[in-house]
Length: 354
Length: 156
Image 1 (cartoon, chains in turn orange, red):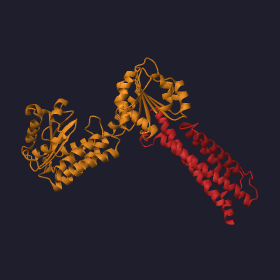
Image 2 (spheres, chains in turn yellow, green; image 1 turned 120 degrees about the vertical axis):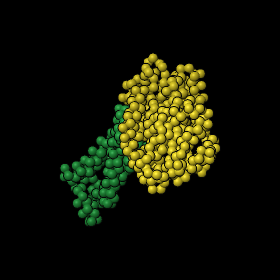
Image 3 (cartoon, chains in turn yellow, purple; image 1 turned 90 degrees about the horizontal axis):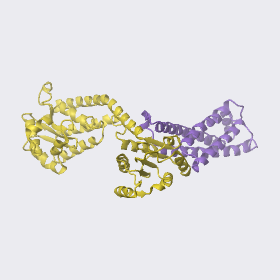
Image 4 (cartoon, chains in turn blue, brown; image 1 turned 60 degrees about the vertical axis):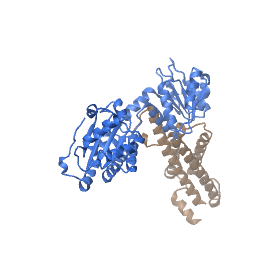
C-alpha cells in the first residue's frame, strides 16, 4: 500500500485558485465516492480548509494514481489541468507522511503552531471514516498524526503565547481576572483594532459590554452590533469605577484618561484591579497611570512586543518540534514496512514537487 | 488543651507559609505584567485574581487557627501554671503576630487594601512567623521549647 498526497496550500497557490478547489462539507460524500470509484483509490481522506486542500490516498500501486488525482481536482475545480498542475504538490511516503504530521502539528500553518488545524485534520479524518473511505493505512496514519500533534504541542513551546494584538490582550486580561465571563468591558472609540480586541473578548465569554464614543450615533450603532450598552462620553469617570477592562481606540490628539482620574476611581472601587488597553496613537491614556497599584496598562507597543515575542518563541520551538515529528514518522514507517510495504522502501521518494 | 494549642499554632504557621508562597507568586506574576516581560513561569501561574483569593483564604485560615491556638495557650497556662499570662517572650511575639495578622485580615476583608499590598504584607508577615516560631524559641530565653511542651503533655 502506498500513501499518496496531492494538494495545494497558501504557499503553492493563491486564494482565487484555492477557493475553487475547496470542498464544502456537503460535497465530501460524493467526492470520496468518486475517489474510491473512478479514481481507483482504496482509501481516501480530504482535508479542506481556507489555507489548504489536500487529498490523502491509500493505493496498492502508484500506476497513474497521481495523474488521475490531478484530473479529478481539475474536474472538481473547473480549472484546466495545465494551469492547475503547477500549483499542486504531490508526495508519496515518506514525504506524504511527514507532511501530514507537520501540517497537523501546525508547523505548516500561516501562523506557526496554531491549534485550529489539529481539529480540522481530526474532522477531515472523522468524515472520511464515517463515509467508509478509510482503511488500515489511513486510519493508522491519521491517528498517529493526531497523536504526534498532541505530543508536539505538549512537549514544545510551538503553541505558546498569543499571536495577534487582540488575543494578547485577552491573554493579559485572563492573567489578571482569571475567567472573563464575569468581567465588564468598556470600549472607547471606534478604531478597527479596538473592535477586533472586543470581538476576541466576546469570544472568551465576556457579556457585559459598554461602548463609548464622541458621537452618540456611532456608539449606538456599534453597541447594537455587539449587544452592548452605549454610554455617553461624559460618564467616563463613573465607568472607571465600574468596569474591569477598558479598551481605548480613539484618534484623540491627547490623553483622554488622566492619572488623577484613575487614582480617584481606584479608591472608590476598593482597589479592585483595572486593566487598561490603550490602542491609540497618540496614546489615549496617560502612561503614568501604570504606576498606580492594581492598575495594569498596556499600550500598542507592549501588545505588539508580546506578539513578536510569541512568534519568536514558536520559531525557537521549530527544531524541537521537527525532531519529534521525525521520530514519529520513523516509527510509523517501521509499522508501515511491516504491515503494508509494497516494495523496497529505498526506492521511495517524492514523485513531483511544485 | 496543650496539644490543641500546639497543633493549632503549628497549623496556623503552615497557613501563613501558604499565604507567603502565594503572595510571592502574586508579586512575581504582577511584576511580569507591569514590566510586560512574560517569562517562562508566566504561562504556568494562575491569574492574579485567583492568587489574591487563595492568599486571603490562607490568611483567614491562619488567623483563625492562631486565635484558637492562643486561646488554648492562655487557658492551658491558667490550668498548668495558675496564671493567664506569664509574659514569656514567645507569648509576647505570638500576640504581636496575632495583632499583625488581625490587622491584615481586616484591611483585606474591608478591601481597604487588595492585590499588591496584601501580597507584600503576607510575604513580610511571614518573617514575623519565623521570628515567633524560631527566634523566640532559640534566641530568647523561653518557657516554650518543644521538649518542655512534650514533657507537659506527658504530665497532663
